[in-house]
Image 1: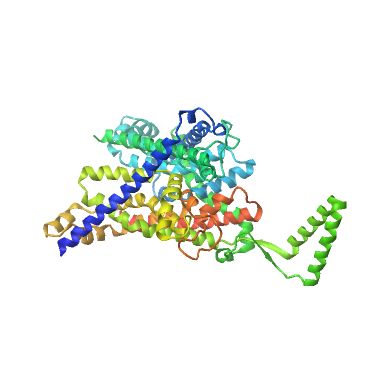
Image 2: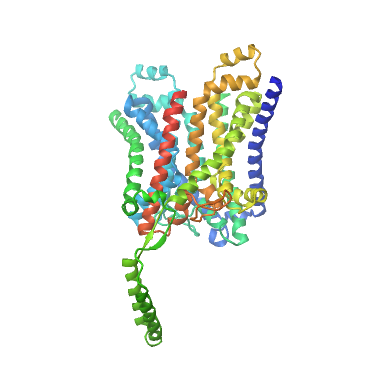
Length: 268
Length: 326
């Protein structure tokens, strides 16, 4: 009887794993079949107004890139504070708040940026979108930096200080270097996450059918356009949405796998 | 230089505090108009954007107004501008004295809670099974590969879950259960698939904190795998597992895109599990662009409610359960 219960339990557990894998396979094959059937090399050459995706892909990269340019230095500096300078109550409060911010609903961050950037500046803009994504990225970078710096042995810091280096030199030249790979992985995963975000962009950057690098206007976004296209009645719009989804997912998963590959190489 | 560097890092850290407090204050001040207008009744009122008549006008005036309009229509042939002016006046009068627009948040609040509940009921057993499989059952290399696959599932953008759910998953569910393809049920299930990998991954991490010595002693006493998991690992990591579940719940509450495709987006209380309705994030996603004045303020009120709920849920998970676990 005990052995039977054990058997049933093991079978159920394996079954759950298979269900999880089945969902992954189902979504990926759907994307592959639907995406490839409407995939054209021309998608990369034309803008949305001519039935392509060029402006959207470039726009999404610019938005996520600007967000990274905001989120990475600020997040790393904050992580350094938590691990190297901050002691006591304030640092642990910030650490807790940053953890909470990481799980805050992305649409709420969109609403926040709408209220403090879009309304005062009079309209949706690339800047607003980049700020919204930057706010999403910030706590993830803080968390990664904080965790990775905590793994650097004390002795390294002490050796640096014993050589007469000032504290910030020790941090920049020794501690960060020692934690480089881990931080880079975390940043790549954070980037993969924000480049696929839709909700914070809906009413901050919106999207545009045309190629644009003007950050003060509505800015082309791949994800927001997927949402618009998927809701349109024409078959051709939906096919384009599938092709865009395929490209987006491929991008996100590749960045993700690169991140994992870097860590694995280091561990071996 | 040292001082400057220290200041910059302190400033960046404080930014987290500033942003979070900023979000709260901004949402609060933007929703002030709606809060003053509706108060806490907002939470229990099922009507969204509905004109209600404040005082019933006597029938006599009604007929009078009617006859006025008839005359106006006659006038219209003669003088169009005059007629437009007249109609404007009538509209203004109605706005000021007889009707007002009412916004209530009950439908999206109920929609948010129910989709999250459905997602949780669906994802919980499967996520536990996966976590047990990864932590205890699978050989190391298989566990590693399956673990990566599960984490890739977690990395897929939510809008993809929405599209796949709408065109491939929902039709099958609707065939089995009946009812609409866009409904509480299909939205909840797709949300469940979305939080599944997240829940499984952090539950596995909690289970992995169980010391090997404990497990080995139990095996040495002749316990089966099931007994070790039930009597050793689960009690040991219980607090962490509950924390993981609540954290996944917090994620599900605020999810927008996957739900937006599937919930149907109508402000109607569902009477059955396969009825369409709306959730707070979806109400925001679909109406923010067009809203203004009181309507926009009501959406900010919804955002504030969502922010407070998810802040509370995540804090409980992090500070009560997950702190205790480590």
